[in-house]
Image (cartoon, rainbow over all chains, first blue to last red; front, side, top):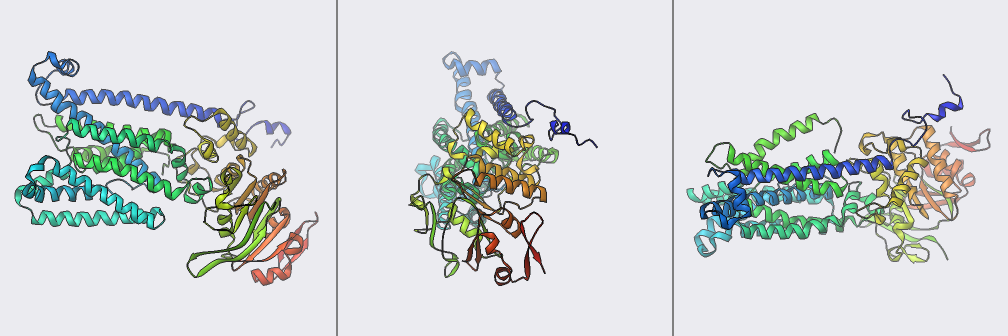
Length: 365
Length: 251
């Protein structure tokens, strides 16, 4: 073996002379690649969105749909109604709900340091389901005048209350992640039991309505709901983004994050409060689409890692992409029938997700 | 002005069961080691000094009570014994987190260079693009020590820096910390289990047992056969090696 001084010129990875491999330049390249990926996915999402708007049982051609979108006054009233009352609201709602659930899931997994955290596993969807079932059974009977709003309102109230309860207990227990997760899981069981009880006492028609709501559907979308969810997202996403680096530091554990000056408990509770608003709104308008909040963050994490500046937007994009694609499939599987989107997202998304996990060579959690 | 002072520090995780009792000491510039048997409260002292555990009127930096000391996080680095390393973050991203309070949405060139210099200093630039959860435990330890030194803290607190390291890297890391501790007005407090490392590198040792500091001073004088028997309950002797450095030899 040659132990002469010349061997020291060869660095650890075998490169001779020049800049060492890795480091600043590679970081910059990786960041540029991530940005490119986000831009690419955004373009793909735009394409998927238009396919979603083009797809439907009325047999309208894409050119006619585009004409109705951009020149609504120049098309017949039927086409205008189909595009502006059904197709556009449903397609936009798919984007917003997917983005909201993706962002909410990414933040829950980050602040709770747990790969299983999502609106579904923390009981928010179950609480919304219980609220919706209460409104379906008792709202129609006793408050027929607010029939159109009773279900989303009750779903929102219960979803939000469950999040408040989780935050409240979390705060009392000094924001410990494990406590918050356990409280969330306990609430999921509680609300599922309550939901079963309401179903037990409901009539056959009410039971059918409850089950259909629980399937998850975009069919009730309208511009009012889109406005509310879009506004919430426009407020919440920048609020989370301002803490991007601190949220990234949270993944090193509370102790390390605190030593870096991050108020770990405070950040956990405030972020939980932010995502509770968009989660509760997304779930109350569309029913239980639990899968996206869990899976979109994992897909984003596999693609760009956990620097929140890339991770959070990509989780939102992935959520929107999955739900938009599912929205197309709902309409395309059996022409003339729209399958509930909650079922399609899970049936199509889970095999795709499992393939990604099994195929991935790197450890990503 | 007293720069780094602990006064009458009592801490309890469970009410009525204090793990630290009325501790008081002043940390001088240089390399200070905190030694003592398991569960003596060493890590808790570090967490209190780092502000991770909340205390009141017990810890003072530059004459200010810790809760009122505004520049705590810019002037102090703390490396806990265990760090979650499950995140899908590259080594370079982890390095940047060491200056999280200075980072904006677009990372400045200055901060990128700071991270690069720290990696170069530890000769670990070749793993900068690897994920933190894919490198060995020893490499992770080196990354986090490099991260702790990166912002040139005036106060450096490290809990067992030689964890997971082989003999060569133990010496490398201790040399780095020692060199840094000697660069001017830096106060370093390191929890060590290896008494030979304490004898070799520390300027001053603090010996803890049952939540109290039972001895402190020059390592050569403080780490004695009598102390080892009383504090660690082991019989050992201190021998001088050929190079003049003292070493603990078990009987």
